[in-house]
Each structure stands twice: as structure tokens, then as C-alpha cells.
Image (tube, rainbow, N blue to C red; front, side, top):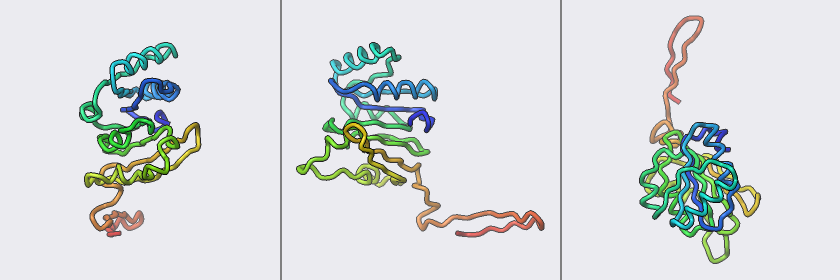
Length: 186
């Protein structure tokens, strides 16, 4: 999916003991698009295990960033494709702090069933995208019952697809026969 979107900056979160197939797929996608693949891990131990498991799989190890989410996400701008693990306690914070590409982005939550329990409130994409007064909106979201659940959202580019505050825009039409130019406000 990341290769299909021609993602130039692919970011994922990974924790010690996590599965590696998604990471392998993202690494291959970044190679096909010529983009950058970054993995965020919480500590050095996780970083070492991640690197070893990627090497064992025969895939080139992506750039690995270790540290607190706030510090690490600060340096990543223009994210086109973001994958977070819902089992990680701070996954919503990662989604909120992501500096997405001006053209929009795809955000994916792995293990989405694992995070939905009766004691926790239900997750809403709008809650992480609209926060902070951003001019973005969720274009489309879908939940796929694959594995432990995939929750995918396509987030709009800056402006959210509306022409202005009232949603109106100007359209220019040239009549081919007469050459007249018609400007219409829609």
C-alpha cells in the first residue's frame, strides 16, 4: 500500500517482541519508491532486536530512531505513510504529533482489536486529526479484520479539500467555439 501511494517518507513504530512482517513490507516499499523508511523504537534494546530481526529476514535495515515520541517526531516532517501499533500505550500521541505531508497521508493502526476494550473509550480518527486546529480531515477510513485488526485512514492535504471558509471556489471555462472565457463561482 505504501508503494502504491508512492510514499517518500514512511514511518513506523515498533516495540520489543513485536512482529516483523509489516516492517519488511515497508522496507521493500521504500526501496521501490526511493523513499525514506524510519522506525521509531522506545529504547536501545528494542532498536537492537529490530535491527537483528530485519537483518535475519534479509532486508536492509531502515533508519532507526530511539527515544521519546515528542523528541523523535519533532525531526520528521512530511510523513506520507505512518504505521503505529495500537498495543503501544502512546499510539494516539504518535498520531497526533505526526507532521504529515502537505499532500495528505495514510495512517495505519496495527492490532486495532487489541486496543478496543470496554474500559477504554473507542478510538476515533477525527480525535487525532482535528486536534490542534489543523485544517485536515479524514477523507476515508476503513477497518479491516486482518490479523488483530487494521484501522486505516486517508488524511487530506492541508486545507482539507475545501476552497475556502465557505467551501466555494472559482471555475474558469473557455468556450471552444467562440473563445469566450466564463468564470463561474461554485
